[in-house]
Length: 94
Image 1 (cartoon, rainbow, N blue to C red):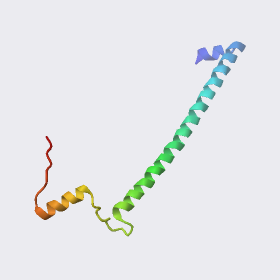
Image 2: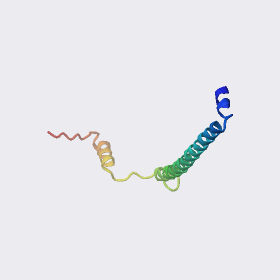
Image 3: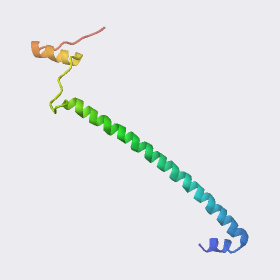
Image 4: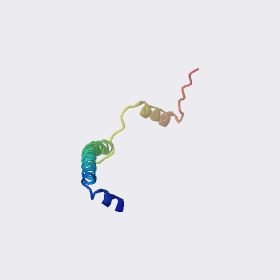
């Protein structure tokens, strides 16, 4: 600390220190602006994800809070076959 104080006692030292501080201030302002921009972008992405979670919850529970009916998907068809016959089909390709 003593060395810095002795450098700023002279006019040239004070000008150098002032220039360094102005550059540091400009760098910190740029960094703050980037941080705020990233914060805004992250907040928007978080809102999109939260909205999507709510949509998926509504789909899974149905509109009246009851479980949604299973659609006729290949997995549902396989499960229905297993329930009917008690056997699973396995497809082998050579």
